[in-house]
Length: 377
Image (cartoon, rainbow, N blue to C red):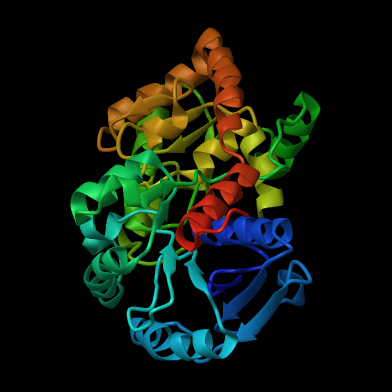
């Protein structure tokens, strides 16, 4: 069997949830299934290390897909030709976009449909493309994969897709996320904050991540307590950050708010481990990889009580209303003052995070592919 895979999001240094999913899953399914052939279809030059095994070839299909118009041209006109030329039997799309003009069976991974619920959070042409086409992709797909049971229910109910057509493949936590020792934490904090404890946010800077909510809660925390904790915001800036920029500038404690920019996943492990807590309170989340990674590092997590996060945090997290500044701030106080609660959160988080494993994720994706092809292995 020959399987074509969209490799637009396959990067040697993954920078967000979709690129991490693509890297970890494609690496495993290509290596674990040597009797099948895989065609990785890139839209740009790629690192040769991304050809993970001998049964894998890489193809560059121009143009580079930086705009919705290019997405349309690439998927609807270029992909069908490549499918014919390579004799592909199935198309797997880790980013959810498939070709409507091809008869090749397709399995998209639709991580979430936040763009239907919060269309204003992304640039207008991207929003229009997603809202118009993803419904069509879902109807055209032979099976759909998503990353949480929340997203499965959301896709099914909002788009009218039968639940039996949707498979769940939980995201994983990479092997290098482990708790640090006390000495390692002390040394890391000395380098990052001069030894001062800190709260942490990890994620791309976009409106649905609710970074203004984190900053407002931090401001309130500093106002009502004597603690001098810093706030570390880690992630790349995407778009629509005017409110975040204003709050950063106007915060009375702006000198105690540290922006690290994007970090590699290996760099994130000590950052999580050394934090007093992860404060991750997005408005909408299909999974929430930072929550799982932080728990695996032995860090307490404060999470939104909405969308997928109660499913991911289980009984290890403090759940808060992402729109309630006082509630978030109160949780920040609890996690650093209640030693019994903190110890319990750490222990439960280490257990909860074991549910999220990239080997299991890749196996779930492969089972979905086999359901479509009818193969046994």
